Length: 93
Image 1 (cartoon, rainbow, N blue to C red):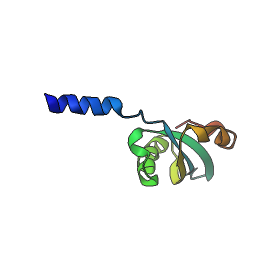
Image 2 (image 1 turned 120 degrees about the vertical axis):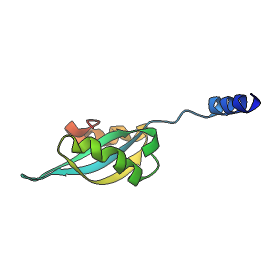
Image 3 (image 1 turned 90 degrees about the horizontal axis):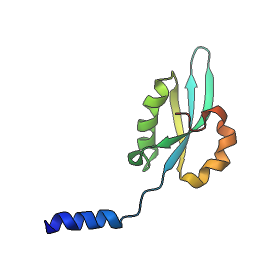
């Protein structure tokens, strides 16, 4: 019982994890189309570009897009500066 209470106390004391986002490039073939976008990532994908790609690639693929690369991973403070560049692909996937 003491062990369970200690774990609960540690979890309650831990700061809430902030949202994270990735900016990326993707493509479609026939005809070739490219886009730059910004996507919200699940917490478990915030640690590396590889984890972000693993989370984002299937979401893009459902709409016929192939992920080319993850450019960066950032917090909410980076959203405003990327919004205009991402256009219709801002938080779409």
